[in-house]
Image (cartoon, rainbow, N blue to C red; front, top):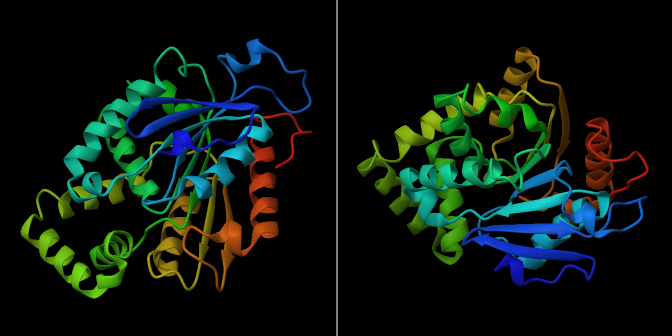
Length: 281
């Protein structure tokens, strides 16, 4: 579990549920450390949605970036069963909404950072929000920024390829074909839900500034599909920052292009005015 990975003595972790872990920094950059800061009801919170099968050490690198900048981090892990059976992911989405509106987090400004299939997990939460926008108006207003890194975008075939790469990469072709058969056989329980979540994502009730990381050679994130979403959001008036590479790695841009990634991320987060200007990523 991600909670078992020790980040630093200045950070602590709390397992809130099977797939949700809360990471808390003990100090804010540029400010004296103190126990009251750890309990600050208005401290910014990053909602981190990693890629499926992410190793704890890999996610910890992103956690440290935010924790050292002045954020606490709520990590929500995606699971293959919730992707293959969307109704289950909607149930998880309801639980996540309850967590975000609990006493511990209800007053916190939010920054969403979703990787790969984590974007799908967040889109399921958006489906629930779109069903009752008045109920969740305060929540959507608390989201000050959104970051999408290697968002899975494209056809159902692209999603099937993603499942194959994550679950059984050594039998990718066979698993991909089996996944397509599964999606076709259970269209009402799978593909129809996916299409609904895609529609809601395009017309997202969250209109906070957004940052997109993607590349041309990502088999799980069609660059043309990404650019269609970006263009549509621009027409909707969403303030966008885009960082694209010709060649990079799915959910691995930080490792492949560390300086460009951190500079882009840092500038975007600073533009949101969620942390002191002296805080550096």
